[in-house]
Image (tube, rainbow, N blue to C red; front, side, top):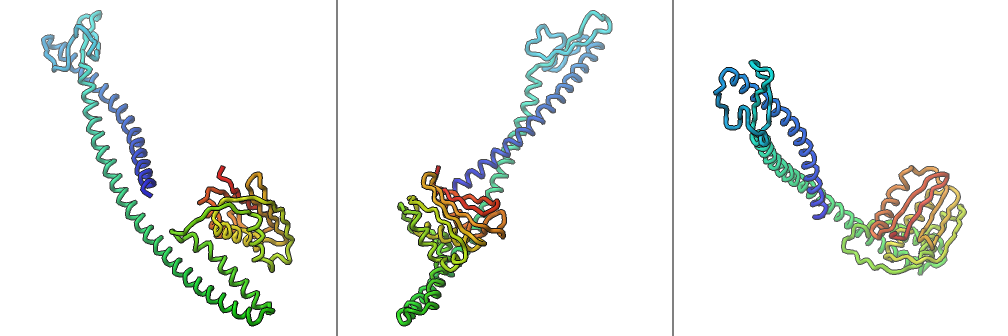
Length: 324
């Protein structure tokens, strides 16, 4: 967070410096033009006085008919009494440079103070804004943790009750369906819980993706009965936390099954470290499958993995389990 703030202030500083540099360049060119016109008027003024008074003594920075012009800006005028003779009025080059430098120095000091003030003001505003965002984020996290904790307690209680029912009525299919519904509810909220837990212990290990896909499909046996399922599954090892892998596959396959009309195709490409999930859907927007996809993307991003969606005739999701 500190690095992001530093980069933000640094970029603001560069933007202000670049913008003011362009303004300074325009001011300098315009000032130079005005000063050159002013110097010509000064030279012409002394030339007119010299015509009436050849003994005219000009200011220190003005010389009539200088013997050498190395350090002078020379302006030549015709002598009305002798057209073949030129009256030269020299103005010291330092005089011209000092006037411009003095003005530009004052301008740079003002701009420096302006930049410093703007950055301090910007910092105050940003700090206040980020503080409010952090407080709101912490409040939402605490609220979500409280809700998921209570929901977890409720699910645990229901699982205990269902286990007792199964023990007493082992052949009752309705109780089995209730058990599966409770398990699916627990899986649905698992990804939310894991994302908002800051101190969660993540253990990255190598797992066979094929086995986890088959386990995830067991949650959706009822939905898959009326749909064609094509599985092209090969062994492929992925380096990831077990819980995160279960959450990713459960949400990914759940979305694909839920929104498919008639078929589901799952393919593993070990050489490309790629998982492909395709279905025939017609009610999904161009942005994806909603919140589920965003949660999947966030988890995969934390490992450096990528997920891409292609919508043509069918809806296809590509999950790249490679950081290259």
